[in-house]
Length: 370
Image (cartoon, rainbow, N blue to C red):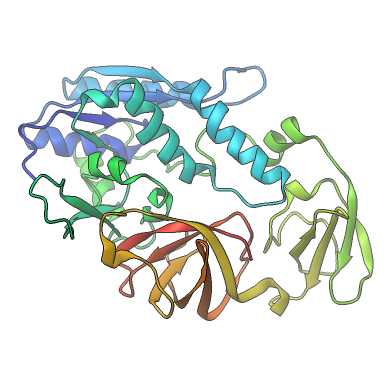
């Protein structure tokens, strides 16, 4: 792609990845505009947020390369959309992924509505790649489609976090470091003496900073104590403070001795958390599960349509591992995944992210229903 005639916006987060994105574009003779998206909470007395330091880092990097930096306030949009999505899913006993929805609703959504619409491309520090896709449309005016493709760094690959963005958002997405390993990015940052070259990668949900996730949930949903029961025996072990503080497959934080214990099932009607004991309980695994509302990344590419007996690879969480499976079309947008091997911690509400057999092209994702 020739970037010389493109208007490019760079989303600077304050981290090393997006900073090297800016360096890479400037190195090519480009002069993109930089933006810092403000999404963190404003109640500084309650929430220890790192956004002030993030903005300082982003400002220093943009100045180093002579690019202007603008702060775009998406605080309200984040809390009205992504935070509401998270709380509603948790309240229903599901396992949401706010970072997935942040990409669709904020970084490539609200930002585009506010400022991004003035630009041809939005560059981010995601570890992902794109390739041109062949379209079945005979029209010469049809826009060239893109595949979302995995990074060569299996640990850092972030295609799973991008698997819910719309096709028009993927069209505008630019991932200048997506072909690199994390070590390469660090080396460039240190060589270029970037202020955040040695800064640690952010962990956890993007807007919480150092805030404990359970404290965040407790603020909105409070506590609702209920029984904790051993699935195999029906024996009551104690009480939980609320089903929304636990997720399927969870081991740490259950607070019972004589374990290890794994959370394996939630009964929302009776407010009961079921657990199993042992280092590798079979009840913590599933080999067959369903997902709904499949979101295709390239709807115009008809050969991408899912079908029964299609061989795929998939992820249910952000790990380096891709699992092999066969799909079964159950109709009405529901699919059954028949995994080659049992998978630990399959939880309703998670996204099942689908890839081709070589786990190179990301096909899209759907919400696990079991």
